[in-house]
Length: 291
Image 1: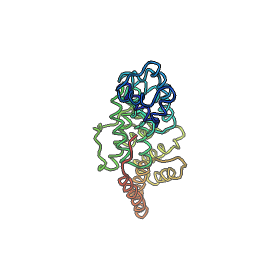
Image 2: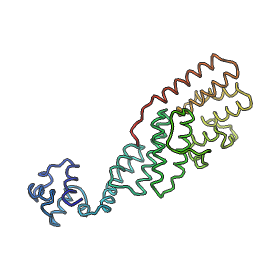
Image 3: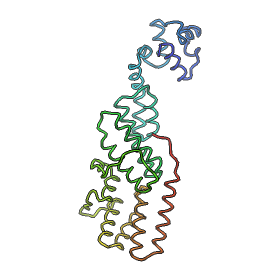
Image 4: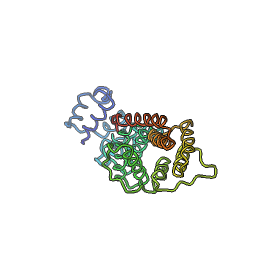
């Protein structure tokens, strides 16, 4: 991009007219000639225009590679602010607005996709979550920073989504077993134990968090204690802690199975109806804009 085109791009981005940018130092006609490549600005004019556009003078002279770093330097405060606030979509948009990508912005974009997908997953928006976790796996390959944990956790979430409904197919090749690195995410650690890939070992107090309670209930079910398992799972429903919607689906599935084992078919039918309703909502959710 030549100097004139860059000046015009910055001016229009700031919604300035040629007269507003020209000010008192140069004429609007001269600015028009510079923007259209018919005149070359002097150093003094270049410094003047850069100051009115709010960029370093060197930015107007930068080559393609240098332009990226100038733009990145200007955008990073906003990118980091959005990331710290959890505004994943805004943060990603700011990164995508740069004329290129480096390892740092690729890492930030991958983490935005991962965190946004987790939020969609917890809310039960499984189609959007699936798309976001697929994007996470792809973006993790674009940076030299260590992102194996994010790709591993995204894989665990994708496996859970496809287990809930095979119709939600993924383009990511899923492994036979989940990688241990997924332990970094509480839900993924819980799901690995649900799959029997990691033994559940309750702490001295047994564990009162939602994940431990469900895993304890599953241990009771294995031992034939369906009545005790139901008590534990009903505690999950009464806790103030938010429960990810897909986990609730798994809990209601187990509660239905326990009720059937206890020959309480009326209650089993009620749990089955709740579970069917949840699955219908999961599948009805449209795709959302990717972070």
